[in-house]
Image (tube, rainbow, N blue to C red; front, side):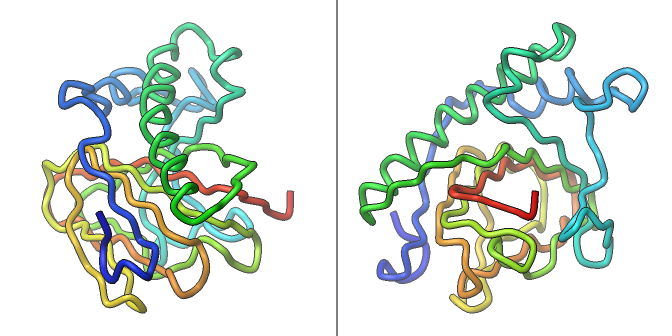
Length: 203
């Protein structure tokens, strides 16, 4: 279905993954205790913005990135993280394929998937996924749990604010008109998976 006016191109897919996927538990069980010494790549890190800057007043959360090419080289102790990535992206890609058909898009590049974790009080202020240091065509956001409070997804220029449910995937254009925010979590921990399509940055 659509989130907001159908002409805006903000499409919400429901129940994308089975209820028993347990992505959060599996991911935390695999990388939750990982440190810079035991796994420099497969660990939660403080999220950055722009040119790899930490700006907690603007973006306060942690993330873990993985891409398709990592699956074959993933160390055995982090194999479960690779499985979670594959299962999450299998569902996300089905949504992206459908979305591309709706709008006659040919999306040729899939950015690394960014698993994002918001503890109580953490947030991501209003931003677009197409900016001064990077460009993107379509943004895809998957929601891995809903056992928290707060954390609404807000698109101020579209006059939209909603609380996602586990199994939701939201797709919309990445430009400034679709600037969005993840409001502060007031209780619990929120997990999402974010991927941009036809993404490019200064690197």
